[in-house]
Image (cartoon, rainbow, N blue to C red):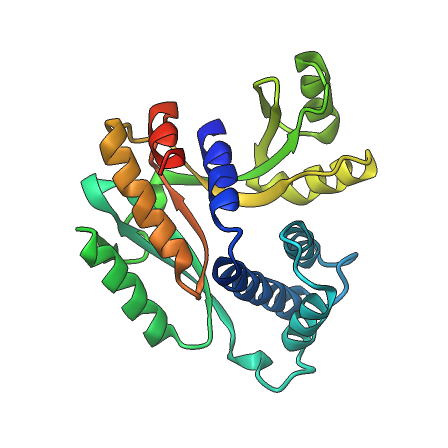
Length: 251
């Protein structure tokens, strides 16, 4: 999974311009609003909202924007009821499977945008359940090593109740069952651990390996999907290689 984290870092560096930041804020605001709508406006009682707020703060989203998004979700703003969370499934180039999480106030617009993006890349939207069987929901957390040793990383993961950890000297990635997400998150927080990423992700049961150029082609399609206003997250069964990352970073 480290390849995905390194790719996120590359995308973050490339997305520093104002237009990209505006899109990121729009996406984050929708995530906050839907989390507040589904679980209430108190982040101490609503872990989904807490994580959405932490993600927004990590992106330097202004406090006023965050508070406005919470009000929208809790119904204090008139357009709150329009938002809904919808998960789509489909395929990209070379048969790579996608699970696309969206938050939208117009599902017709969302479907049209997804179909257009995928069809232009030689992919397509699928029926519900067409690719979900290839994935398993898992809790995922990452944080900088900050001088922690590999033994420290394993001890940290065990104390948090996680089932696996990857350590590469710079990054610690912690994994757990999807049902254990809140438990692990709460335990890391109680230990004073600040994570860079804390998400419930769809992990492929078997990753699909392509050659570097094909891998980059699929990664560009994923980036195009992520650029759509209604898209919150894209999970795939693509294996991200260092060779592909080097190509993407050099662009």
